[in-house]
Each structure stands twice: as structure tokens, then as C-alpha cells.
Image (cartoon, rainbow, N blue to C red; front, side, top):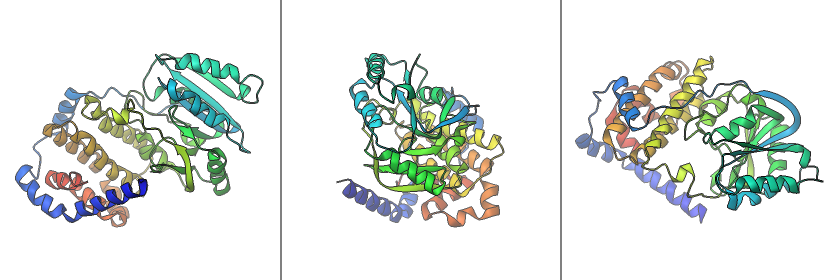
Length: 366
């Protein structure tokens, strides 16, 4: 069934590209080619919907590589799935040593008590001394991961969401992929496809997180991967097979943001992480440019749920500003645009020329 869905999605994508010239003609009647909106106007308009209340992703984490792997499990109100998730971790068979941090971010259901009982049940096993349970006041989606990241105990890091599960052999396969190849990231698949872009479903070299954590205060905090972590990597390996079970949760951010004012965080988080990345002297890379242009599409799809034309125009104005600030010189000097797929070349063109009409023709066709 998933292959059929992917095939249909790919077919519709191709049809959308074929029909894009027609969409542009239609957009000529609906949208201006150039916007009469300053960056300040755009920021004020979007701040009125939802202000940028987030914080920097820059920090200083300590790293002590006592174990091969440090597994971080953020928990917030996932009691029905929690035991399954933890069992899937502690029942892994692997040659690699691992430490587990389970961080309860102020859950209001039975998760805190369940965690304490589960930890007590580990007494007498080898896992008891290599597991920690942390309870903290609720601080938002990034906070639980960041608490554990502040003191890293492994050469590699893995994130497992508490309503998901690791499949048997996941740690062994992903860690062998990392250690044998010397990769910075070894990532697998889940039943919906590659785990690329998600925080979970992979192991990371812990050094990647020495000076960075997930940006606090934002939804869409996984933007950190695309705009900071991946561009720092010298080698990323894709391990074949499915190793992670993602459980769709109707209460998750990805299933509740549509139409919400917090949708604007999809832009604020991207802008914050990019700003932090370049503030550290890092350079634009092929991978970063590609991720930025892909993010232009995903953020536009998020903003469309607001059904607010002025918000869409403000989004485009700020995305054009980010493109000019971070990528125009890099793409011209290094010919990054030549290596881009067809659709992303058009996306780069509409940003560099501030062509809002083309932007709507492209993003509305996906």
C-alpha cells in the first residue's frame, strides 16, 4: 500500500510540473509579480499572527564518551505507548554499549509514574546503572531532548520519540553502519520511507551536538537537522531496511499545526537556525542550499493552511531576504544552481528575482 501511495504521489508531482506553465498563466490573474512589502512590514504582519518567541540553538554541551551510544527519549503525555517504546529499546541485541536518558517534560498523564515504575523494574539488570529518568517542568518540544544533550555520554547519539519504537536490530545495524564507514550520521528507514530530515531514525556522531541543541520555544524544531547538523557532516550513510516504527499521533505537532497560528513557527525556526549557523562562520554548502529550497516548499504548504494571502506574501518576502543574505553569492560563485533538480532551480530563480507569481505557481503545484 505504501508503494502505491508513493507512486501516486510521484505521479501527481510530475503532473503538477507539466501543468506548471498553465498554473503560471492562472497566477497572472490572481497574484502580482512583485510585492510592495518591506521586510519590516512582513515581520510585523507575521508577528501579529504569532511572534518569534524562540531562542538560539547555540549552546555548550559536555561530551564524555563512556558508551558507544547515548539514546535520548523525550516524553510528554504518551502513557499508552510508553512501555512498548522502552521495551523496544531495552530488548535490543547489540555488541554496542548504550546509555539511555528518558526525560519527562512535565507530563500531566500517568507517564511520570509509569517511568518510575519501569525504572524500578530494571533493578538487577545491566540496564539499571546505564539508565536515567529525569522529571522536569514542562518547557516545550525541544526541552526534553536538550536536557539530555547538555551532558552527552556516548560517542554517538540516537533520538527515539516515546510514542514510537525501535525495530529489532536497529541499534546494531545503524551503529555498524556508522562505525564501519566512519560516518557522521547513519540513518535508516521507517515504514513511510527514509528517515532523512527527522531527528529520529538515525545515529549521530555526538561531536555534532557539542555547541548546538534544538532551538527552544519553537514548533518544527527538527529544522535543526537540515539547517545545521547535516551541513556539518562530511559523510552520511543510508542503511537499507526498516529500523524505526513511527506511530502517527493525532496529538502530535505535525497533526495539529494546520490552521494554527503556531504554523508561523515553521518560518521563524528556519530563520533562527540559519542565522545561528552562519553566525558561527559556517559556509553555504550544496546540501544546505538544497535543504533551504526544499524548506521553501514545505513552509509554503504549512502557510497555505492559514488561508491568509497577506501571510503568504510576508512569508515570501522573508524567504527572499534569507536567500539573498545567505545563498546568492554562494550559488553564483560555485555554480550550486547547476546541480539542482529542475523544480529547485525554478525555486531559486523566483527567490533571486523576487517573483511572487512564479513562487505561487511553483508551490501551489506541489
